[in-house]
Image: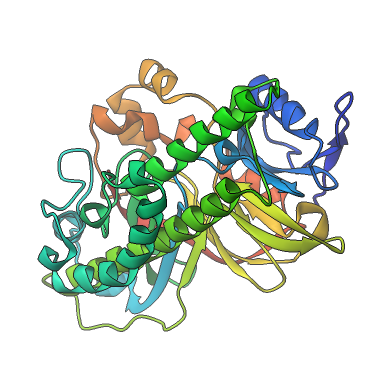
Length: 405
């Protein structure tokens, strides 16, 4: 049984770490100590096994706060998360060559920097299913931009139903019984970045206004009860809705694309999909107090709640069920977690390494994705072992197709 180790920064709250058997870089530890010294932390900071250095606060941390939110701890990829659906297909129902399946998904889901948005302006010009989804989101953004005009020029409708770049992906996977799953990873895209960046700067302005000095400027916070705090909560909530809808729109496109491939028989999708954020903030009650829980690279894992913990390209991923561990504020990791920067991965590894590490997976095998090579991430098996008291494994997935932005 796993469990947390605890350290107490001088002058700060405890930090409880589910990191037994996995590396934690020094930069992440310093960030954790800085966060733990903030006066409005509730009880302690919880650290997931995929923890690594991030902007403002560590990725893989759970930060409960009373009376304040740290926008940079929530981050700029607001509502980023995962979605997975099980289909009625089995491995034998897929064509022998999966290149057509990959190509069909790449055509159906705009991705990357050059084709990562739709070349349209207003929601009425979008494809029907995307336009309908945007119509439901547009009034909320209109209300936000009336109060904060700086958000008006953000990419929004043009990014709905698009994947993005970096570690965002679409996969076709097989579970332990060879059932076919579709899984994807993305968030709120350009509009989430604009909202996050805007309020991070506003929080910094608040610190300068009140002469509040912090060990890291990215720990600038907004105080509950202020108009700016309320506006931020509303904006983040909208971005999280956008992110969830974005994943739903893309998943519908993936199902349709695979269904149109030669050699794939008609199939159905299970009614229950898993769709979970892992970069977000929301109010919750823990240890008898209503607090704001920021999960920066962490998934809510309440009793019976389903979540997704992906590995890296070429490794396993997991559908999990939460155990509701109160010490972790009902949370678990959001993935394997990086062990090195993207620049370091590109310096250290070659295309040949990448080809060997992704053998058996239909995916890009070029220099443009070396920063996503499995060796740049922690061992997903060690990560899962370190959090066995947080979640139980429901399904183990191995990818056979991976589309990267």
